Length: 422
Image 1 (cartoon, rainbow, N blue to C red):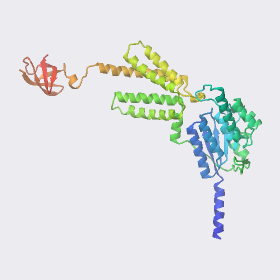
Image 2: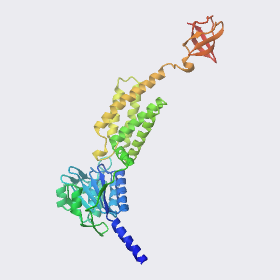
Image 3: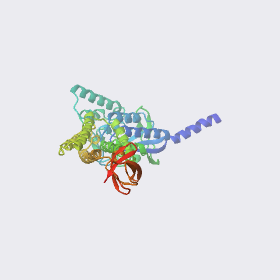
Image 4: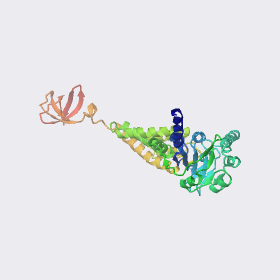
């Protein structure tokens, strides 16, 4: 009896476990490694909790191809049915978002949204040779067909989103058989698809049990949120320049601590972002050139010419720093100008202070003693004692000096001062 009851108990527990809550993920940015990690984490959690479904709310202009493929791989192999919802109204799922939408078990768009424009563009936005361009296009189209047809969607129309860069409104996408429904929000999705049977990617049917389930949103972790923000090229550029400035201040003014710590942290985040983003080496070279020109401007009298050239080099280098065809993955012109001008002014100002400090006579130590004025503590007839800077020194003089008279330091000879009457 026990041997029979135990398996039955396990089946009942598992049945209840496989109809758990609905997990919701929100992707409102460019598709990059952090968003891919976030989606993979959400799918793994939904499988561990036995969620009834996972709803991925999507709003993206596109993103990096490797990250897109990671997300699609997780969707296609997910044990939990995945519903991709392009919403709310007014957003889009372009380029990589188009692929992700069509890979879902259930694809839904909100009124007033659009998708498509998924023609692959090479990193850097440059036009590759005709043969390579054809290879890239054929690969992307074949990849799309590989899962769209198995989802029962119109592969021929979907392919036009790649080869012709065609975009579709929610109405057109529904009419052409690219999506399963148009819904204004998640509540309507639950209402319309509860009890519906969907065919998983492996061909097995699954009945969606959505009504009565609580919708729980999985937010990005603090680390993911920070890195996702840092992956914004505009923020990465600002962090990098702040980091360099902070370290420069710390090196020139040792002991301040805060500029060095803050600069190191900002520079670390910038390097993490630039390690992930497609960086243009020419952009980096132009920014380094700008630094050199700022230093020369502080040292050489160029009447501002070198400073202007440095600003121009920094702006141009910032604009081409990130090689990406997606505008959201490039540095904006206003950011480039807004960062270059104050950075140039601060860098030149600090460099001038350093150069002026090197030109001035040292006011401390042995170099600062000559020409200082002290007071004779004893009569000095060849030898005696003087007080300088609150210190008592043995002193010698070629002339007689009475106690209490002011003396001028001529030189330091070992531990003895050579002085003269003021």
